[in-house]
Length: 411
Image 1 (cartoon, rainbow, N blue to C red):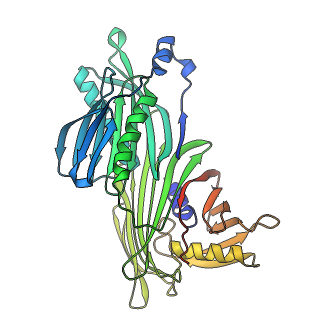
Image 2 (tube, rainbow, N blue to C red):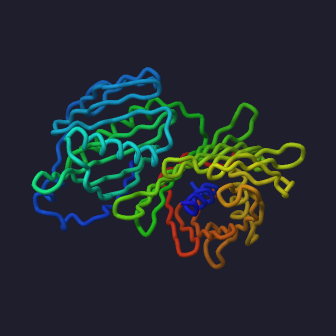
Image 3 (cartoon, rainbow, N blue to C red):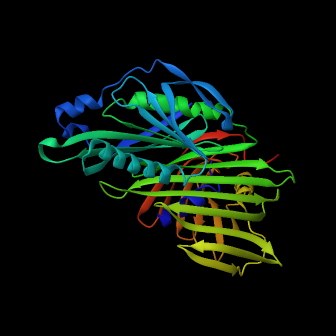
């Protein structure tokens, strides 16, 4: 997942209705007739109930009959009756690892609970589907698992669906342990997420969400938000979440978060970022200028890092990369070079970035060279991504914009 995190960090520098993209990892026609019939079962969710959560100022009607079954500090758990044999289960967290890692953790916990409840051993599980999508301005991840309990004549099989989305102050996860009813499940999840979105306060002047696919398979999303702080500086928050199938039974999970501050001239003030991979903190760094030198502190794979960068000149921030991109698009120049700090590439040094126009094409068709990464991008005149691809060795990640609000460069 190292390379994928580097992909994300690079993309977010210049990237950017309900959009849905999902990929079934197995062929339904390979299953017995009874399973195929059960998988296409659906039900219309007509009943609604009141969802009240004072902490998030939520008092909304949502689809399904929600019943609070447990809560503690920063945690709420609901059963949602939609008329199927088993209820949907929905969770709210204020402390979490991220949309990918937390969804995977909940699914594994649910599988263990299902086995215990049925007094049978979990004998097999398979990745059935993975997907990404967007509800309003909020991206989500989907993860479906086919599993079996017991052996021989007592063996039973079922299907656990999972969805997760991070809103401004919390993470929401829903699961449903029943074959079929995929549309009904999503309908409830969508209504649940909308209740949180409706009551969010937004100070961002620019926001974008993009989807990432690997060989046509949706593996995750990236999101960035720009706002102006009380000192007139640009506050930048970027996030990514990825679920990548490793084999038939497991996923690699990654969640990355970065908070940076930039001056309006595009120079970096400071930055803090961390990555959680496969349930554990993989890296955590901060960078700031002290005593005329860039100071980096943090940890990688549990080992501390504390160093001064050899580069002592100003560094370009994510906001600055938009300035550079927009300036290049408007100019007659064919390329632009600048230095950035990309911790995922190497936290102890800087990278010289070269941004070039594609000869013979639109001035908004760009190539972004960043060490081992080569990105081919189609952008808007503002520099915001429309679509593109990133290559590193034999791996190609395709990216496409799913949501954009505003423009990144202040006028």
